[in-house]
Length: 468
Ligand SMILES: *Cc1c(COP(=O)(O)O)cnc(C)c1O
Image (cartoon, rainbow, N blue to C red):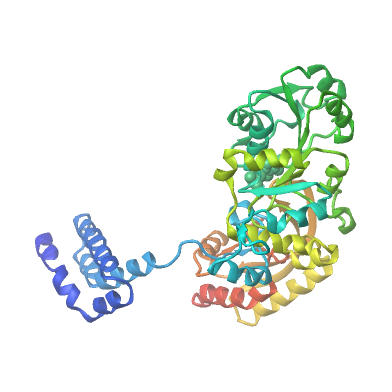
C-alpha cells in the first residue's frame, strides 16, 4: 500500500474550509474552534495512517475526517460537568457532588446570581454591608449561638478557627480524635498549617478529663473536640464531652472548639437513625465555637459554617485568611434559603433533598421502585427487571455504621455482561451510576428522583434496545 498516496488524499485545509459542513460549523461555533479541531483531527489521521497497514481502514478514516472534526468541535463546546443519575444509594456521595440543592431553592437564587444583588450592601442604610448578614441571624436563631459566619468548606472553618484563636500557641486534642477525612484532610496537618501546635492527650480508645487538665499550660490557647465522623471506636472507650470540658476551660480562660463534621440540626433518631449530637446541643452545652459542613447532613451548599461566641467570631471575621476562604454569592444565597427551611423541622425534612431522602419511609421507596420498574419494563427491554431490597447509606463520612433499608430496581441484561452495561451507562448523555452487587446492576431508588424515571427508561432502551 502506498502511504504517500494516502497522505496526499487527505483533503487540504482550504478545501475543507470551503465545504458546506465545515462552513456551518464555523457559523455555529467559531472559526478558531473549527481550525483547532481541523488541525487536531488531521494530526490524528496522519498518525493513524502511519500506524495502519490496511488500506481500506485508512481510506475509511479519511472519509470520516469531516465527521470527526464535527464531533471534536461539538465536544469543545459541550460542558464536561453534567447531571448524573445517582443509583448508588449513597446519599452524600462526595464524588457525585454531595448534597443536592433543591430545584425550588435554585429557582429562588436564580435572580440573585444572574444579576446584581445586595451581597455586601446594606439596603436599609445605603452603605456597605456584610455578606454573612443574610444568614447570621437565622443561624443564631436556629442554633442558639451569639454569632455566626461561613467560609468555603469545613476544612477552611477548622483552619480559620485555629489560625484566629490559637496561632503561636498550643491546642489540646484527644488521640482518639486525630482524624483524617477524605482528600488528606488531617487534623494534625491543618493544625500545623494554622500555626498552632498540637498537644495530643489520652489514648486512641480512652481520654479522661484529667488528660486535658494536666496538659494545660501557659501556652494553651484552646481545647479542640473533633467529631469522629467517618469511623467509630467501639468497646472499651471513653471520651470527654463538651459539658465536662467547659469548667476547666473556663477556669483557664480558654475557649472550647468543636468540629462537628456533619452539622445535624434535627434529632435524626425520630426517623429511625442513630442519634447524632446536634449543633444546638453543642452550643447549649457552652462550646465557644462550633463548626460543621454545609453540604453534609445539613443538606446545603458546600460551605464551612461557624457559630459561637461573638468575641471569637469577630476575631475570625477580622482574620486576613477569611478573605481567602470567603463564600461567594451562590453559597450565601443557598445558605439563607436552606436555613429558612430549618425554621420548621417539618418543612426542613420535606424541602431539603438530603433530609427528604434519609427520612423517606420504606413503603414509599418501595412504591417508587415498583413505578420505576414498570416504566422501564414498558419499553420492552431485552433485560429482566426486578424490584429488590437493598440498603442505602449516608456517605460523606457521616454516620458510617448507618444502613437505611431501601428498595432498588435490578436489571439483568439478556445479551450483554453486567460490566459492559455498567460501562455504557456511564457514557450516556445523562450518565447513570448504578450499584453493582453480585453481578447485578441496581438502581437504589432512594437516591433517584421520580421525575428522572422516564429519562432512565428512555436511556436504557436506547442502550439495550439496539441489541435485540
Ligand atoms: C467532613 C469533615 C470535615 C471537612 O469538611 P468539608 O466541608 O468537606 O471541608 C472536617 N471535619 C470533620 C469532622 C468532618 O467530618
